[in-house]
Length: 96
Image 1 (tube, rainbow, N blue to C red):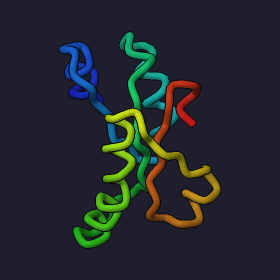
Image 2 (cartoon, rainbow, N blue to C red; image 1 turned 180 degrees about the horizontal axis):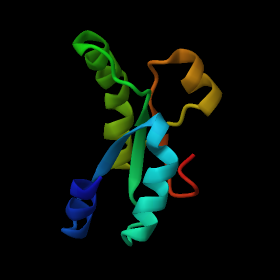
Image 3 (cartoon, rainbow, N blue to C red; image 1 turned 180 degrees about the vertical axis):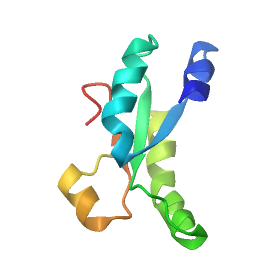
């Protein structure tokens, strides 16, 4: 998250990838660190073994690219929990 903030401050678009267990803390920290507009892509946590982590990364990739280009998608939180492998772009209004 700190890297994403540094990149944003340098004038480049960035997105932080956050485990769903840490979304509340990440929203709090981005406000404290003076970057309330920082965008997140939320992935199910824990990532799991390498194959599972790779699958979750592949699922999150469209959201990462979409968030960076302003075309992000959003998956409702209940669906995220049920799927266990979906990512979710989190905006600036409370992160959800």
